[in-house]
Length: 143
Length: 314
Image 1 (tube, rainbow over the protein chains, first blue to last red):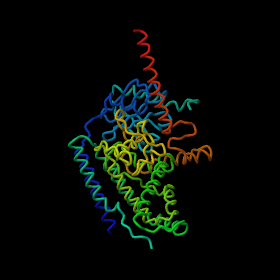
Image 2: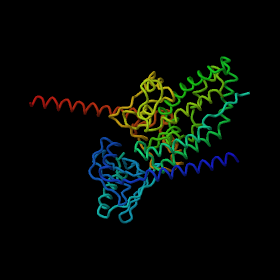
Image 3: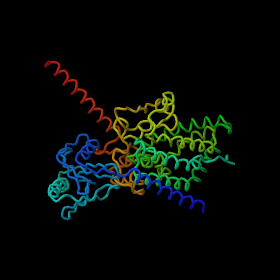
Image 4: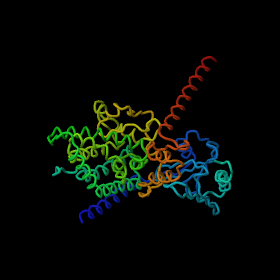
């Protein structure tokens, strides 16, 4: 019984501290081109960025890369930090489009799916970027 | 009859909560420490899970430790005050090696990675602990201390004190301690380096209490003001989900071993450093640092050559 009470009390304390942290340190900044580029180059110093596409909610971004070859950058704002990936064809299971929204399912245990709602003007270009990587899977000597 | 000693971490928990709150208020007022709500929640939940998982398996490890001590110890050392001092030092030495292997062997990294998985560095990070340490061979590192003859209860007591010491070093609120202190003890500055994922700082400063072990065994890197620490993993987690946080590296090991093309590769997926692959498609810390060093050297050479050209032109 003591153990149960202690666990419940701990969960309560944890919830309170989490709530206080959220209140005192609100997340105020979204993704922008500069932030995306800075974080991606930190993650992959040899990346050559062609263009950054940011989702309409400014929480995710896809980056058209010239280097590394046959990849694209994928960034997600997690809390107040940014999580970066350089995605090759082996990393993507599916890319499903509905209008200007793409849902990527990834070989990534901590980020298995990611959905980007894009500006309509960007959707076609982003689709081309993703397809150019994903379609590597169908090329016989892609590996 | 085992010595009946208190468990220091049990008594420290209310103090931990108090100091976390204090650090939050300090950070809010000064901007010198940073928190994020979900990250805080996840870190503390990992700490709670670690406590529960530790409690569930404590009896097994306690019994095994005592079996080793009772049947194989070389000396009868007793429990005087100086035995506690020696035990503390030896336990800290053992901790250094457990921790070093925790970064250099993927099997042990699978448990330890949780502690490094926050992109923040504050007192909640100190409590962000593994749920799966019992699945690794880390417990073996204390057996030599039992074999020398120090009673396990004394070692576990000292280990508790060691963990409590390490709580306060998980902060950006303290820049540097006095030079003499920085020379001997683990400090917030030394431990920020340890938690940093900057290539310069990877796999350094494994100390618990005494930083001297890192200096003795070549793993010490001082904090460089020109290279501010950035925290988290080389490949940061994309989730706050505690279950995915707890088990992501184990899942990675399982899938890699399942797809291994040889027994050798399967074994190395477990025992080689994190990031090792047979084809070099992922990067270990050593590879990341080597690439970074090469870039630094190229930049320095370009700079020298540009300066020489400029001088020649003048």
